[in-house]
Length: 322
Image 1: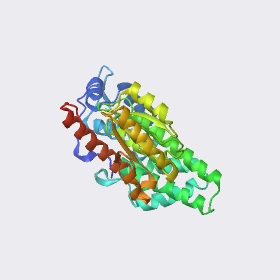
Image 2 (image 1 turned 90 degrees about the vertical axis):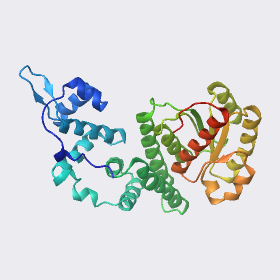
Image 3 (image 1 turned 45 degrees about the vertical axis):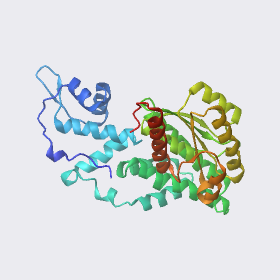
Image 4 (image 1 turned 180 degrees about the horizontal axis):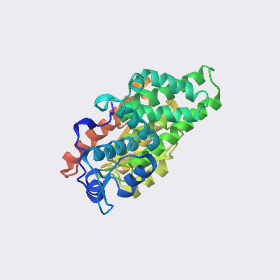
């Protein structure tokens, strides 16, 4: 669970100048000065000459706000959570916040999505990211919510407009999180896309987000990628791995041709695949040339690491795939 720092254990002595704080926290000086002006945190003291001096206490606050915003929490909501935390002893989050289990958050998120409540859906996800680890929120709130939305639509319990609203809300959220973590890649290039004819890419987008967050350089192609265009992209990008997703029997059958074409044209490029249809019908894996990448985004990103570690070892290269 993401918690505020144990501020009572940190010194409040003002000893660090602005440059030192920026260096130690990785947060630009303009950013934490803006937080100070708008929200009143941190609270540096001033020298006789008017220069700011920060304490260990201030730097812990800056680091905590940095981590929450990196997880997708809006800065104003992060400050509110921090303020609530400071009202409790030993820096623990407020009790009215911690009482909300991940199951309760999922239940409420579903209700909000299916009643077109954009504002409260945003607030709930911000709260979830502040309470629980990043990947847990994706796998135990967002992913099951979207599966249940799809099931409710199939059962006729919600209409297509509600399903589209939920899908587009989650797509925007995941894309925004991708933007947060992109630009810091230091590992091998991975192409991620859907099989020809495959329209459903939310699960794949989540998997791509896991990869980006772990430092992989992801080229995300999205839904229904034609085979010829995929092969052209592999030529241009020269990836270490191609990951393709399918969610129906029809699109899963397309992966046979995709896998064969990749193996014949690019024998040094790894090919992996996944998608809900393989979770439901695991026997399909026997017909697809390539590596099944697991049942969810966490298994997916772990398997990518395994594949590329093996590839690196067999080629005698010295890439960092940790």
